[in-house]
Image (cartoon, rainbow, N blue to C red; front, side):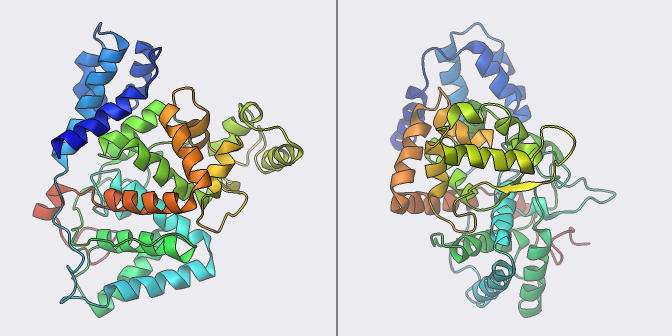
Length: 378
């Protein structure tokens, strides 16, 4: 097992180019507050860049490895206490996606943002109170997460059937799986048994969640910190085949290097012109939205990767997967998934299980099953 984990780490490291500079490393890792504090002696050392990268990578890999043992989750956790829970969630998600296909993406995004902060413990669902600062107003979340009412509705249905049994964290994890299926994506089994945290972290939400304008190395570091590989990162980014992005998050891209990365075909130029109409260079429009997959925006498929091959990724963080000079491994994966939808579905399913298994050890000891997903029980 240890040999396999080491192989993954050194495989990742081997794909970095030798001209990667010390200043690049500093810039990337300073964006992660938690990592920066622990890695400060290394970041300011005189080590050669490759040695420094090796040590940083080992630190991040081992931190995530030892911080996340196999969680005490199982497929039949609710078999005797709430056997109908999966059916209830599926039926509610069917109604939500039927009313608006965009709701699928909203729930998947909620799940991702939850798991990247304290693990998948429902902390992202907590509202601010006098005694608790939630994560909803952190910069990556404040204008991005709008699916909370969907989870509230599902929770109310589940509580009416099985009061005090099913955690909000499990509801969100199951709902994310069903959301993907309902717009054409793959199925995967969801192990359950998570508890809801009594805490949230505004600071970690601000530091851990990748942003639309972030560079490739910084994004990779944030995934590795969670115990997710580069392959997981590329596959999970494929969730952008559904959902919308705000103008504020893609303005710099369409007025920046979009023309450089794109094929400059008549179709590409028309697409860019439409984007600029939606998102003016100045004078407002921050909340105007555009689909991240302009070909099949309401269908979960591999079109997202085909768009990246053409250099037309809407977000900088997406196009970086294919166009960054540092993306030797990510570029190969993008090309693979663009031509192999079955392979993409398989890897996405596996990576979603890994994402859902990022747990908060404290929540298993001190957690609870919230009556209302927005508030800690009193």
